[in-house]
Image 1 (tube, rainbow, N blue to C red):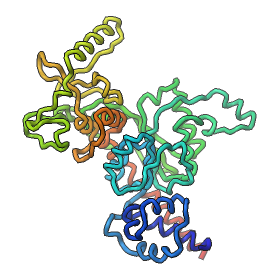
Image 2: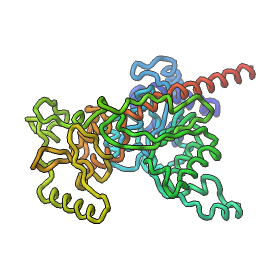
Image 3: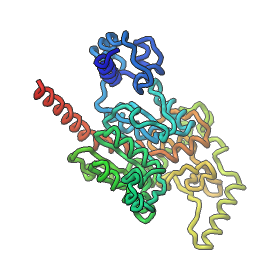
Length: 422
């Protein structure tokens, strides 16, 4: 295949993949999804004999999948909460990276017939990642070392974000943005990112995104309790490659008050009225939550004694017993250990209980058709590490018009360049 045919084959494949999943296209071409993946990554060349078939497929509207409005990649994907928010606004995921094998399983169960999930992002070459309009990443917060930066600069050694963030997972976000130059990105992290290391960490992040990579960024800390009965503050950093009219003040957050969701809205009612979506994993035939979620006398006595010990020392530790009409603390990845941060009140003189994994899914705003096919321990970790999905959808809706505007600008620029060339 000559260079011209080679370039056309990849352009046509890219166009086709905007409307078909790897599995759908593999079925049409009588190849495996693995072949499609290897063509896209450049591991193997697209067979020249397939070029006519790809042209035909590209020329016809897809009956399998509606055309997306924009594309995105999902890094540090977890179980797909950010993805779901952006899909709801017309986005299509073209690449996923998540290192935890159990999270990969949950992700694959809920996004079947999709592309392969890449593992450790630190092992991935940025050039091998498909082009995309938006980069999404809920990257972990790690220490940023600023020591020795001036010395390295003086010695002519790597500088900028490669120096300041090397060894952190934010570096992998930065190097992918540098290589692929997406139109926009959304980064999600814990609220404490702002104050981490006396503000130095966030200073490096801002400097990297703005000065080194040239993006226009803005951020906001938002509490998930606008959407779910859980106090969960997270920082959201939005960046655009060009100036836009994006404005956090335009975000329509539900007002906190009497209409704000309460725990009773996500708890199993236990009165027999709930249709079990989990085949008896969490509730019995009468609708009651299984006894295994109720704290044993030993564990309940231990937690109360431990809390009292810390209160006496003025440490402020305490297990949190909440009633159905309340809002809970933040669900954490350690919830599987003893459930102490969110224990459900069951009546005077009764031991409280943990949330079930399905209730944790609801507490994060996931729909009941979201599949939970891992152990309780894994499920608790996954939802504790996840995002408030309805919040992601609202942020996606705020970003979407500006993403599409940048796409239109880019397309018009290409057309004008072609006209001037002609």
